[in-house]
Amino acid sequence: MQPAKPLFLAADGCFDMRLEWVIEVPGHYLLRVDGNSVDAHMNVFRKAPAFQEWCALAGPLLNEPPQVIHSHQVV
Image 1 (tube, rainbow, N blue to C red):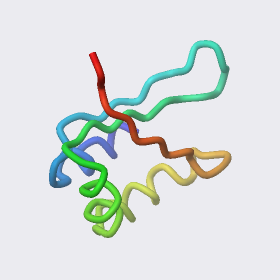
Image 2 (image 1 turned 90 degrees about the vertical axis):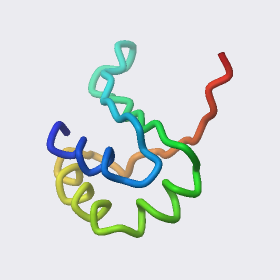
Image 3 (image 1 turned 90 degrees about the horizontal axis):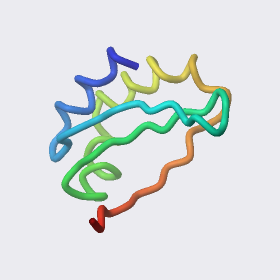
Image 4 (image 1 turned 180 degrees about the vertical axis):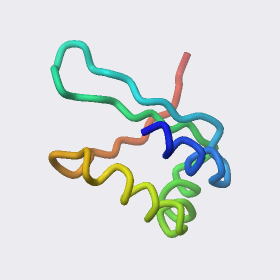
């Protein structure tokens, strides 16, 4: 996933991306992408060529489609 990081960071509004291993569930990972808005992620990045590049990089590593959850930091 390291080659995918520049694809995220180049996207408008994205300021961080990291992949975390889920300790309690072997084989599961959490991909965190921090950005300015859900709209920038869903309607800009996902329609950009960089998203297709990410899919090409990540697709072979995935057993199933990723679950996407949008959240907002409270504290």
